[in-house]
Image (cartoon, rainbow, N blue to C red):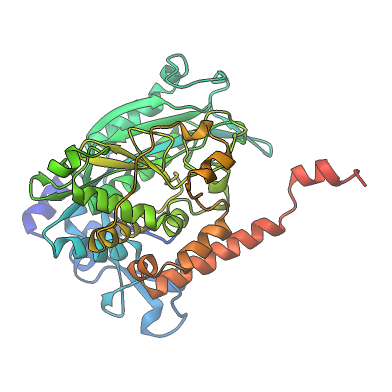
Length: 445
């Protein structure tokens, strides 16, 4: 980092670094460091107690007990909503080496496999979220008047959230993101903000920046920003859809070639093979895209309590088909399984591993479906040979554990830590006695 950069930050009023990394659960963590320590942050990193971070599996003693978030100079960016503070994203290092279970390092390894072929993966990640408030033990939409039965694109409630939404847009744009659109989504209190696609690692960094800003600004407005997948049983859940394309320099490798133009998909042969790999590894990918017990209230087979759902339940693809797991579009496809709780680095790394496996094995995605899959019964789905996505966190963990390709991409340490934590979560949920159970059974027998 040049002296000119340091002087520029100081001249802009920056006095503190927010050294930020992301834990296994996809939550931003970090600490504040005086700007004068920038050189140390870039060279060695900011230090943390390794066992205090979810999913590291690090010991409490010895050189491997220390986790260092080594700053990536390309991410250094003042935070408009925190005057005087600049964020720098850290990669995990332990005992002087890149830490294999750091989610950002996992994605770096996956991106390096693409770079070895001269390729770059670009993603446009679309976060949906809720603005909530707590009333006693109940969680409610922050806007009391946001009660339409079908609130999609509602222009009555959207303006009422303008102070938050415009503050969020302004903060993200000032931090260098290109905001494309903001709308009211399908549930009460639910919104979506889209920003421009980018190289995969940068795109994940943008998602974490978005979350940092949204949490802070919502709190200023007296609301709670939530990326819980499905906070209300009778309302649609929040997705984190990925628009995916592969590039070689300025050329999109998914643009239809002669063979692709004649197919039922607007993608090149390479694009179809990548998609086929994602379909083949869909079970293992699901637990990384939908990593909580609550996620499987969103990915339901059959009629949802919330009526229309845009969350896929079947391993299928289709041209501009939002009811399928993969929606193909000219030169790209949309992966619709991820929900708002997904760790973007891990989901992207697993996606790359699956896609490359499809390319290396020359897989074919099979015929596209033009049907509205939500209108078909389960026997009809099975009759067409369309597999189901995992329907619980336990099932999804089983699929990951059985998938050598995806586990290898995550690495031995992270795979084991992830499965251990997620199986503990599933067990805790199974043993929990809910209000629904008490209401149904307490006096029944």
